[in-house]
Structure formats: C-alpha cells, structure tokens
Length: 296
Length: 247
Image (tube, rainbow over all chains, first blue to last red; front, side):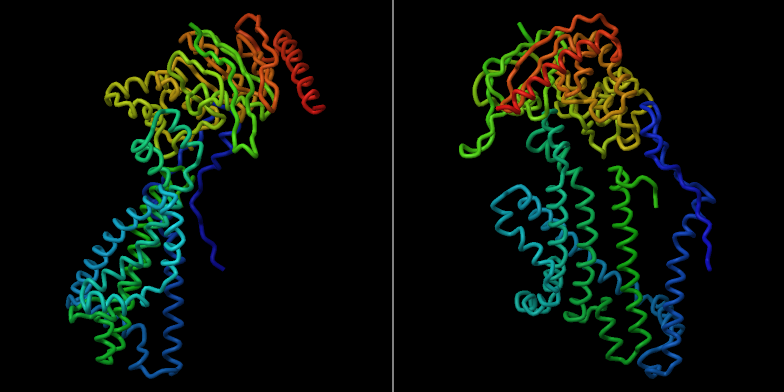
C-alpha cells in the first residue's frame, strides 16, 4: 500500500472567522521552496503511475500476440519513433501548421461566441430565438459538419476553420450566457445603488462576476476546437504536413509506430493546453473570486 | 428642510388581478442628523421604503422627497469578490471619475475610519463577516452620501460583533452628522441605536406608532432603559400581529 506524506495544510478558514470580529482569516499558505517541490511531486506521481500502468498494459497486450507487431507496435518502438520524429523536426513543423489553425479557429470562435453570447444574454427575443439552439449545436458532432463545409469552402483552410468555429463557439457563448445569468442579484443591486448603469454596469459588475463561468466555457470550447480540428485535418489534408495529415500519411505508409507517436502528440497537446493554459486561467479566476480557499 | 419626507406613499406590486399592496399611505419624516429605525414584522414593506428613498423604485402614489445623496447597505455586505478591499471602497469613486490619487487617499482614510487599516490588499473572502460589513460601510461613505440607508445590515452577525459595530456606527454618525434610516426586525437594536423608532404593520405596510428614544448615549443594548423601551415596542408589535391575524 502506498502512503503519501501530504504537506501540512492551512487550518480551515471558517474556524477563525466565526469566533470574533477581529479574528482575521489566515492567509492562504503558499508553499515555497522544498515544500513546493513536495507538493508538485504529490500532484504528479499519481499521474505518472497511471501512465506507467497504461504502458505496462499496452506492453502486455503486445506480448500476448493479439495483433502482429506491424499493426500494434510496442511502447518502446513507438517512443523511439516519436524521438526520431521530434529530432528530425517533423513534429515541430506539423505542430506549427496545426497550432496556427487551432489559434486562428479558437480566436474566431472567441469573437463569435462572445458576440452571440452577449446578445443572447441581454435580449429576451434573441434568447428565445436561439438560446436553446446554442446548446443544440453543442451536441452536434463536428464531423457531421464537414460535408457541408467542403461544399461551401471546397477543400480549403476555410472548411477546417468553419468546423472548428462551429465546434468551439457554442461552448464559449454558453459559458458567457450562464455566467451573466448567474450574477448574484445582490451584486447587481449593490452596483445599482452605487450608480453603475449601462456600460459601467457591464464593465464593473456583470463582466467580472461572470468570469468564472466564462473561463469554464473557454476550457470546454478548446476541447471542442481541438477535436474538430483533428477531424478536419484528417478529412481536408491539403497536402500540408499538419498533425492530422501525418496520421493519414503514416497509416498509408503502414508506419504504425509513427501513427501512434503522432497520436501521443495529439493527446499531449490537448492535455497541455487544457491544463496549463485554461487550467491556470481557471485557477487564477477562481482564486480571485474567493471560490478556492486552499490552493490545490 | 427635512432629510427624508414620505407623504401619502403607497406601493403596489404585480398586475391588477394579483395585486399586492406593499405600502399604504405611509407618512413620516426624518430630520437631518437623525437616526430613525424602522421596525416591523417581515413583509411590512420596510425594504420597499428603502428602495423608494434610494430612488431604486418609484411609489405608486404619494411623494418621496430626499435631500442629499443616499447610500444603501444590505444584510449581506455585497462586496465584489474579485476586487480587493481597497478596490471595493474605491469603486463608487471610480464610477464617477474621481482621479486615482484622490481615490487612493480617500480609501485609505475611509478604511482607517472603519478600523481596517492594513487590510486594503485583502479580498472579501479573507475577512470575517463583521469586517466585510465594515468594508461595506466604508464603501457607502465613499459614495459621498449624507443619507445612509441600512437594510438589516447587522442581521447576519453574531451578538458580539454586532455590539462592536453598534458602537462604531454611533461614533461615526455623531462625528459625521449623518442621517440614517435603519431597517431592522430586532427591536432591541432599534432601541439601542435610534433617535426615533417607527413601528410598521404588515400587509399593507403602514406606520402605526412612533417612539422618541430619550436614552442618553452611550447606550448599551442590555441596559434597563433600552430593555424597557424594547419591551414597550415589542408589545405594540405583538398587538399589530394579533390584529393582523384577526382580520
């Protein structure tokens, strides 16, 4: 059995608050130096263990001879191939192409999502017209859009972007709408008594209050954008060495190790952007809003 | 001139078929520098009166005259959680375009008035309930208001914290010559704080009695004089409730 030595946590804040008016809630203890190292380790080792376990299972399946090695290569072979692909710049070049598309698509989705979201949140007519449709759009598998996208934009970057935007924009809009809908009424009232009206009300009360939900929408939007992009790059290859195109390429070349190496890249990018970019954005917003008492 | 004057004020909510009369023919005045407590059972329209005085709502009939700028405080501190204590206090000034340096100086001063020096950089969730209410008080002062409208501001606090804040409010009202309209359902609190207590009956809300509080300051909430007055007012309220139940 594994016993983890957890870093000492700050005392529960409530205990100090209720006692007396002059009791100050203790500051959130921020770990430093060695303590930070230990915390990082205690957060990381379970993930590493899970990955390790996955690799062991994979290796066992390979050893069992369930599929020939040319179809299902062993982990070592795949990681060796991944090393080669990184070393010769294939992965970086493909990531640049795909990353540019992801960034463009996500930026477009952001603009459109925020635009639609703020209109729907502020107009009753717009809400009853398209409010439920936005959620409906979210359930539509992005791959189902491709035939239409190809008809509209031919086999072009436009077709890929179209689908990426359709994948991500509804989530972003929904995040904003539910954020605006759930601004605590008491804060609206407080803003009103201070004389915040119109644009000021939006800028100083509504927008910051809806931020946690909005960031949640961004996070979800990213997941949809990345999925749609991968689907798009598989279908609309354009002869450019993108991440999705490499997948197709290696399948055609019967390079199973290369294929799986690229799959690992796709998974890694998805996770890294989700947890590093949007995860830290999320934590930052929640800490600012006092929604997180002790850093996790 | 009086600070607040309500004349024949009525307020109804809802459509014609399901009309709720919140206030009927309410008349009272508050003089400059006076602290008036409104007491009554819940649903007697106390908060509606504050909304009318604050200009957040308009009466269905009658007139509400207010001489001065108002600031409203609620039972919840209603601080913006994403702003620091200082930024919360500075927000009303920001909204009217007070320059940054002036804002900073003023918020320092106000935080020191409510005994929160050194807490400017904290966020609301790091403070206790009483401290949050003090920040809300500082924020109300930052609105340059001479009329403070308080809607059960200490209702959610424990007794010790409430006593401390009563003392502070007393001192601030004296020092600044503020006019305060203080809504509470706690009769003792009203007797402890008010220059006058106005009793209201529920549904529709009407003024049924008014008591001048001739108890010398500083007062204690557990002093015999405060308790005696509170008992008288409580009896009055009980009568109201019985009369209301019989109708």
